[in-house]
Amino acid sequence: MTEQQPLLKTTDLRKHFGGLVAVDNVSLEVYSGEVVGLVGDNGAGKSTLIKMISGVYHPDGGKIFLEGQEVHFGTPMEARRQGIETIYQDLALCENLDATVNIFLGREPMRRQLGLLNVVDRKHMLAESETVLSQLDIHIPNLQRPMRQMSGGQRQAVAIARAVYWNARLMIMDEPTAALAVSEQRKVYELVHTLREQNVPVIIISHNLQDVFAVSDRIVIMRRGRKVGERMTKETTSDEIVSLMIGVASAAESKGSTAA
Ligand SMILES: Nc1ncnc2c1ncn2[C@@H]1O[C@H](COP(=O)(O)OP(=O)(O)OP(=O)(O)O)[C@@H](O)[C@H]1O
Ligand SMILES: [Mg+2]
Image 1 (cartoon, helix red, strand yellow):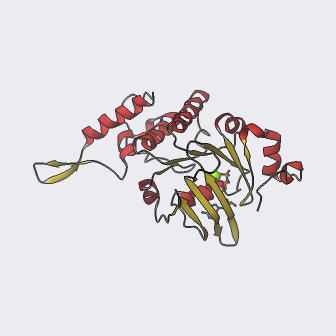
Image 2: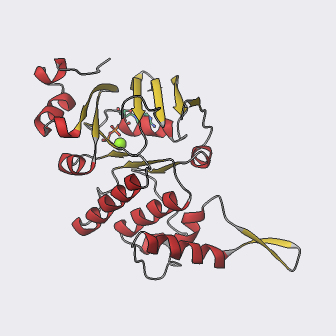
Image 3: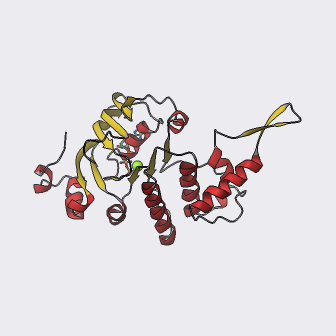
């Protein structure tokens, strides 16, 4: 993880809402095949940061690079086309549509009907969805039910399947397990490992530090819009992470922190 080019790099990303600076000059690097835990107290700026990376918000300052090339995303769809798949804390999937449609959202395969009309190829979508879900060992009975009838875990699984199917270059997950049963949480973490094995880096936001420690290689800590530190997961403790999160003046902060 030394001199290799980062897949994602942000420099001095900044976003304010009126007078409130939600994200304050955050520079971040994510390398191929690593899982980065992004942590911080409520309102620290985590969701705002990832929404800039995934095209929901336009930064007020700073730059985003994908494999060394600067990118500007006008919309989340543009970010997806560049291989950034995101599971949002607040908006995940189209609830009234089924799993196959969600996997193909915005990229539906078309076929010609009667040699004239272009129509969405639902059969192809179903077959492909079944294949990718079974590759991931996800079993969802009746894929053609609306998403709102599915469990939280099944929804997350569909979002992850979408990322895998479209060969995501980066997967971002904002509190993916917050609403899930324990068994479903475990499944999501297994899928995170699957993505890492496929060299797809993952940024995962979670309030559950135990889970962050279980799943991540590296932890980035935010407080009040700023990045106040980053640590290799193996080289830190939850006490140290918590003191960085809440800003307890401690040895933690002076020790090799990358605080701005
Ligand atoms: N659309 C918005 N309009 C105005 N203020 C916003 C908006 N989105 C976020 N904020 C503010 O920006 C700050 C950062 O919010 P953000 O949602 O990024 O925090 P977070 O770290 O994701 O918190 P949580 O852990 O609670 O999800 C907060 O003070 C929040 O109130
Ligand atoms: Mg958030």
